[in-house]
Image (cartoon, rainbow, N blue to C red):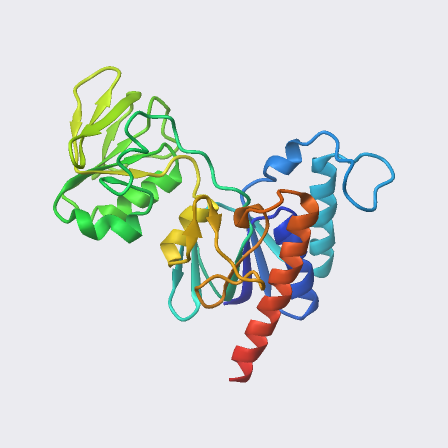
Amino acid sequence: MFDVIIIGNGPAGLSAALYTKRAGLDTLIIGRDNGSLAKADKIENYFGFPEPVSGEELIRSGIASVKRLGVEMITDEVVNIQYTGNLLVKTKSRVFEAMCVIVATGTSRSTPKIEGLAEFEGRGVSYCAVCDGFFYRGKDVCVLGEGVYALHEAEELLPVTGSVTILTNGLKPSFNVPPYLKLRTEKVKKISGSKSVEQVEFEKGEPLKVSGVFVAVGVAGSTDLAKKVGAQIEGNKIVVDENMSTNVPGLFAAGDCTAGMLQISKAVYDGAKAGTEAIKYIREHKRA
């Protein structure tokens, strides 16, 4: 078990790790890639650089600084967080446990532009299998997505629903589809129904009769993970207090996923604050 798991290896996550590791806490960073910052060609508004620096160079330097301290880093995709007194972080291949988790994954991904998707939110369209699967007991549902995250959501739904079909929306699935799941690869045209979702229409092929559509496109974003563990969200941001703490004990969030000024300087501060508050939280609980 780790003291702290940090999800995200951008400025907020790396900043948090500098504090937690120097405080003697066993710290793990789980990152999938270097995010949007790595695509920035020139950064001229960040302290300490007399000449413009690329986002890739800045991230590389940040990673080197935490590795020098001995922070463990792995490349993986997080698909779920659960609260069990401690916090469980599930990736594509493993499950980790920690007293504290800091979500620093940047802003959530955008949802696909499909007619009916926004209109039926809360009336058959959901973004969390763990949260809403119970309401579809014995009913036929589908999961919209082409990646491992979609597969994870489908497997969460399978024990309680009547059937689960994965819709890749014209994309090739990035996983091997198990025989107990159905698959439709056609491009989705529309989600339709009267008071609630009744079917999914495709550009080609017969419509699919379903009672629920679970959106799991790409990878799990910050608000997706927050919802699963019961953290409060507003729009596409995780709600935190002045200490970067969520309403879930031991769960903190930092950086762009908390909204506000989407700048490196703000992310670094958020990470430092979340890291120092996680230190206080762990020390208090170890003394108890």
